[in-house]
Image (cartoon, rainbow, N blue to C red; front, side, top):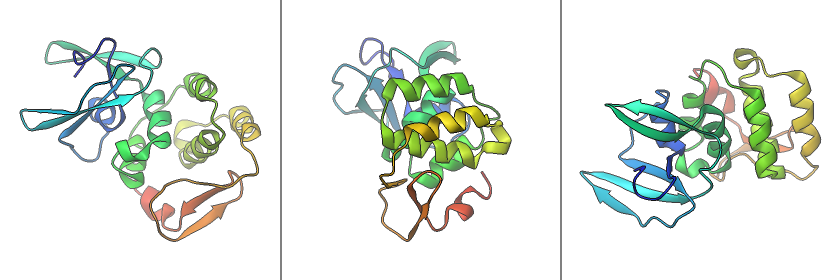
Length: 184
């Protein structure tokens, strides 16, 4: 996967798998790259190029003696909530990231600023608040993220279903969010 394009990085659900937190195993491998990588299959695995910038938020992981470039925990969290379709959906995403023992909030702040998307601030703020006690989400960062959000209401997920407004983040969240995160 890393050799499919210059500076390609393994990302999204594939990164969750490499970090050892994915709840499910996929036969799809997501490759973050600036280059266009056509979809291909090899040995029963589907390789999918995702347009993005692998120039930040990546780390090297050694697997079976091979050095692999993969998005780090924080980039995987931010990219995942931005594009849930590449993470296996909201439930898979939340249960997977909930297995991270900690996150680096300096990186979270840097990556959010790099993307500078209002809806991403709302989504990330909500997700970080779900794991507030586990990851010790700093109050000052929470306020910074909140200050970037607007009064416009966004949806956490594009999946249709019953939702309710989370007023703190101006975000429509699934009614069953507590059930989803109960074991995360």
